[in-house]
Image (cartoon, rainbow over the protein chains, first blue to last red):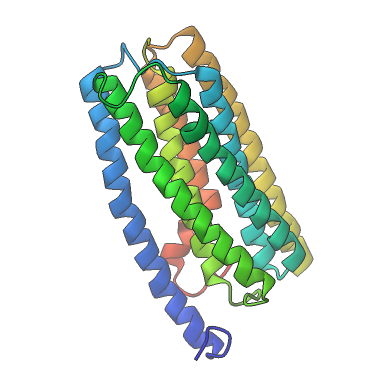
Length: 190
Length: 70
């Protein structure tokens, strides 16, 4: 029995449980990121930060925030049965996600004047951005699956839980970066 | 009715991204001018996260049961 064939009341009931499960996962994942954030302030204080490119930081942050906007647009489109807009917005979110990864892992990691083993700042920087980038990568894969299934017509206005799940996960990754960005790029001197 | 709800939902998404952009500009300016002001910077991050969690992640749905679908 697929999601499209089970009765709607049953689908909605199941969705409530799915939603709770997803949020519990997000809560547990948030503790890991909170631990990294606390470690950053414990080890570096507020007076110093990794020697990173602040302009690149603001660039990748803008890309991620913009991706959240398009993800919201995709979810809204799915909720109202606007398939074309859903596909377009999901694709834009996917591209912005890849762009973020390129900015952090492909550029920032390469130009940073320190390595993961240089000092505490270096270790923290690579741990925080690395864990976060891994989540972005997972989100990008999730988006690709949702996009493919959307094109196959597997979602409708009433039944689009995977789109909502992908959106919530994607926004969570954005929320993590909202805290990581000032902690790594703005607070303290290099 | 559905068209109005749809328009409102899209407009809300636009309003939130504008708010996030304004807060990000303020955050960046504070960071460039006074990098040791960690309290306002973290407060701005908290405000940004609040709007994303409330309006983009729709945390209210978790407590709404199956009454609210979108």
